Image (cartoon, rainbow, N blue to C red; front, side, top):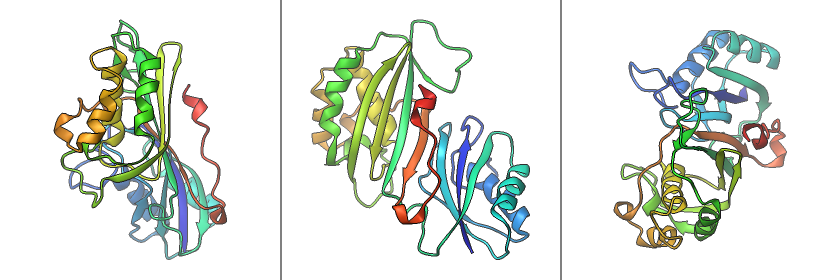
Length: 259
């Protein structure tokens, strides 16, 4: 049978999502834990791979298993085999047509910038620190150039392996909450480093290094070399995924939890 799972994890001590030989990865830990519960090797497929240091509140994966277990057994048994920086939030039986990646309609990320002169201690590795004051209004105006369907070649990593640079940003919202500047972005899909490169451009505009129109200049160039600095992974959260209603997956955590 095929099961879908909702997962949260802290990315600090992982070398990203994808399995890599001799390295600690989220996928490696999840597959090992599920394999122990299933008593056979299990491979999982995720909604979106995350890089080293990126956190997740609502990652979704699916796996094909050869044994019958209750959903509670999968949930409790797998969590008992996982390290404390990964938790399975829910498990649901799905039909064989469901695919965590290809069935997804939209993915949501949140980037949190801690904006004050003094670096944070409690939130170390959970936010990106920017000591220069950010003009959120300028960042908001610049972000509007990026909404819609575009060629995001300038906003993806040079090593990105996606066949097409075309993506559709459904929404891009920026707000200040006390000392945090929060960037919420939803799209039909993301390119490698796309969110971090967008954040890098918006930060440069926010502290006045670049003009508002620079966000569009970078976009239209379709060349990563004209883009800004890739913002750090600290502060980037994979929040949730939208799927067709027919799968009736549990509602992901509200993004306001991070405000």
